[in-house]
Length: 189
Image 1 (tube, rainbow, N blue to C red):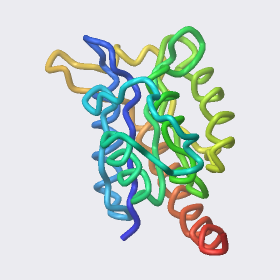
Image 2: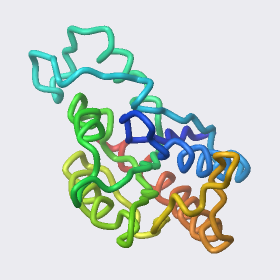
Image 3: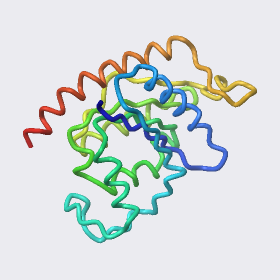
Image 4: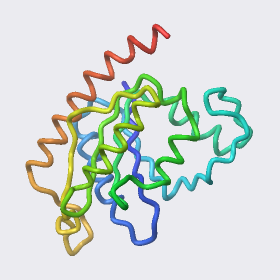
C-alpha cells in the first residue's frame, strides 16, 4: 500500500495545528487508500540546516538527517498541514524541506491550511510555489479553515463542518490519482 506522510508544520508552544493534523490523519486512515503516518515537526525537532553538503548530493553527516531522509524517502505522497504566519508558512517547515532534495521528488502533495480570515491560503500558495522547486506536484484540491479556533470544542477537539470533510475526501481522491501517475515518472528517472 502506498505511504502517505502527513506533516504538521507548527512548532510553537500552545499550538493548535496538531488538532487539525490529527483530524486529516483520521480521515486519511478511514479512507483506507494509504498507509498513513503523522509527522509532527514540533516533536521531530530538526535543528536549523546543519549539513555540510548540498542536500541533492545525499551525503548526510548527521543521524537526524539520515533518519529524516529515510522517513521522507518511504513516502509516496504528502499532506502538509500549515498555519499562516505573517502571510507565509512556518519556517520550521521550510527548514524541514530544505534538509533534503531528491527524497521529495516526483511526489504529490495536498495542503490543509488554517488561519484567520484568509484561512491560511496565503501560506498555502507560498508553500505550493516552494514545493514545485522540489519537483513535487502540489494539488489544486485543498482544505482551508478560516478562524479555525472556533472549530475547537471545549474538550480541545477539532470539529470542522461537513463541507470540510468533503473537501478532504476530494483532495485524498486526487492524491491517489497523482500518486499512481508520479510513480511511473519516478520509475523513469
